[in-house]
Length: 217
Image (tube, rainbow, N blue to C red; front, side, top):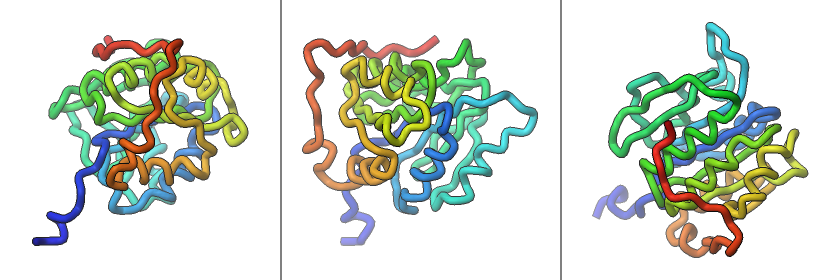
C-alpha cells in the first residue's frame, strides 16, 4: 500500500476565518504555524479599505508555508491554499462549484461568507472568528453550527479588539475560545489528527441561537 493511501482524509474541507482590527497580525501568526501538508482550503476575510492594488495576499505570504492567493470571481477553492477575499467583497460558494464575489453591504463580509460556506459545505466547514470590532462573524457562526459545522473564536486577552469574538461567543455557537498562539495548533488537530474532530466536539447549549443553513444573498 502506498504512503498516500495510508493518509486518513481530513475532517474538514474548508476553514473560513474573519478578522478586522489586528487581523493581519493574527493571520500572519496562524499561517506561520500551519504545515505545508495542511489539507483544507482556507478562506480569509479581513476588513480593510478598498484600494486599486490589494496587497494583503502578498503580505500574508511572507510567513506562510502555504500558498496565499487573492480570490477572483470564478475561482475554485484549492486544498492547502489560503484564499484571501478581496477588500469590499464577500464570497459565495457552491458545492464543487466556482466562487462568486459580491459587493459588501456594511461591515459584515464574514457573516455573508460564513453563511454561504455553511450552506455549501455543511459539517465539512470549520469557522474562526478573530480579533476585530463590531459583530462580524456572529450571525455567520449561527449558520455554521446550524449546518453541522464547527466554530472557534480568539480569546479577548490575545485579541487587539474583542468585539467580534465576544459577539460570536454570545451566540452560544462557539466550540472553543482559544488564545491566538493556540489557534493554529487547534486547526491542525481538528483538521488533520484522526478522530480529533469527533473527540473534541461540544454540544450546543440549550440557549444557543443556531440557524439552519441558507445561502446568503
